[in-house]
Image (cartoon, rainbow, N blue to C red; front, side):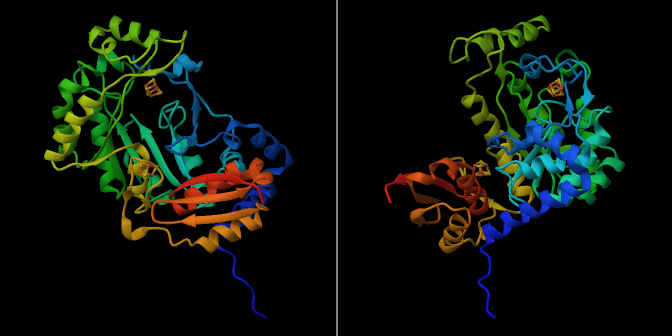
Amino acid sequence: MWCNPLSRITELYEKKLRIIERLKSLIGEDGARKASLDSHSKRVPRPCGLTIHTGVGCDYACAYCYIYDMGFPGRVRPYPLKPLEMAYAIASNPYVLPEKSLLAYGSVTEPFHPITKNLALEYIENVSKWLKPLSQVSTKSFIDDGLAKRLSIAEPNISILLSIATLDKSKELEPRAPDPIKRLEGASIAIKNGLNVTLFVRPIIPSVTDREGEKILAKALDYGIRDVVFGSLRVTERILKSLEARGIDIDAILARIPRAFRGRGDQVTIKESDIKKRLVSTARDMGYRVYPSACSANIASHGQFCNMCSLGPCGDPSRKEKISESDIGDYLEFRGVKRFDIQFDEKGVLMKICEDSRGISKEIAWHISIATRLRVSLKSVKC
Ligand code: SF4
Ligand code: SF4
């Protein structure tokens, strides 16, 4: 008997459902309930992917850190989910698709802090085994040989973002974080173990990072890094005070704040396109590959291609996804979405959906977007 093969996206969705079931059988009802209540099972992914928390809080006390304005404590404790529970929470997130989702470890803590390092590794090992995502980790830690070896087994293409904002003022601005040179030594160990390391010059602190930019880039080259991403500074009123207290000229920052603060804890990204432009040009002159964003480094690290936003296209065009209009149509049908029309080209997908399907179309549109790595636009029409 001839059977209609499942379309690629439907196949991935069915795989997701099977993974959820298998993980549930391993962690039991209590584990599944705990993981289902956790935010990793619910959060809408950010442009860099779904952020994975390996701990709660951070004691590195960086003067520019905004996690303290988000209510996270100045001490770190391991995240309360066990590794398989974390894998279940992520698999259950409606927006996640195996083999397609981007995961970003360490956005609100330092994943390889001594207190959370082992748990972070266990998260990466288990989540990668079950979901095969495109993982990225941002860190200020020293990557020793043992850590590099475990990472290269768990996720050989993992994208490591090594954060450095200053070499000269690190003691004042990042008093408890590992010394930047030590971080670079760790980067070279990771590279020797076959891992992809990108220099993450973030945050760019006016009057500090712009002055040191060339020196940071040159030093990172010495340690074998060839890729770079630049990231802007976000400030709150507290961060401004903290920077000023540590001897930073905040006039140079104040001049770049685009709007008034809307209360305590409000984070404002300062305008730095001119500084970034200069740094990008310097980096290119030095032979760096410059990525426009963290996700771009992640896509490149996994040898993939993406054209999901206006910063793209990113990655290797020869690795474009071979997903057809009928793949998309089959998936919509499988999910019970009444489609009216699908227009699909190199740049994006326009889906005309019958009005009564609107309630479920957001996560489905996201699946189609990450499966095709194209922008998806939705239009509701009367059917
Ligand atoms: S290491 Fe990261 S999370 Fe920790 S204080 Fe510094 S910026 Fe914040
Ligand atoms: S096109 Fe590039 S920058 Fe945009 S989402 Fe994709 S990888 Fe990220």
